[in-house]
Figure: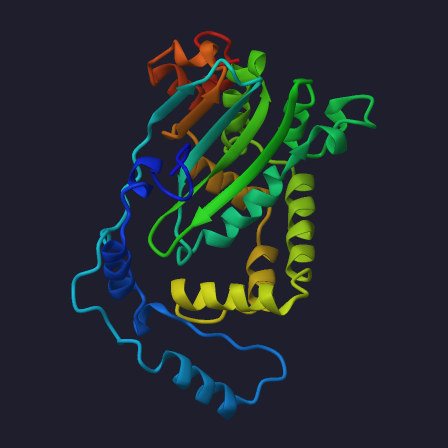
Length: 298
């Protein structure tokens, strides 16, 4: 997933033909895989009639077995793509994470808000001291003046998930960007401030109230019906994250991040990391030696 084109392998795209597209449509565009959502002032009977008219001819299920239906198995790895013609480097550090239907799903959503997103023009412009940041990751990034972008992502599916950070900055900070992607989540397994949890919880609550468009509501409902088989109301989400505190986040981080095996993607002018070639120099930063300079990425 990490470091690969979102639209597929360019070599394969050149070989697509009409027969392959027709076979893909027959295998995947079936009634079992489609959810039609209507929100707002909708006449139920008229809506059902329109759906039957538009989708009534679609088969309920595929005649052949669906490809790639096996459960994903997470495998830690290093992916280095060196391109010295680029001005800046791209780094991805991601961990194995729970699925949408796991009991820890909403805790990981809260962790995503704890790490947050970093823009150098927004998060490091008016502070005299980066230590005044409430966010541990932003505090670390504030000491790296040429790391301009960081974003936390949580890609959760019905049977698997992946969680981590994308970072973008100057090539001289490639090693530090890999380390920053590890540092805060792993340290959360030892110590979490209540301030960070409350701030993230409030941000999460506010985000639940921002879905003002019908398109956003329909997309969210459709995704929940496909992945979980039911509509999860905002009140339930708010209640689930309201129970989180520093203690529960610390236990969660210790379970998933401490002594874990994350995956790393580096792309661009990455000579400082592409020459390492051994996973152990990345792996050792997932233990308490994350603060130890010996064999450390920092």
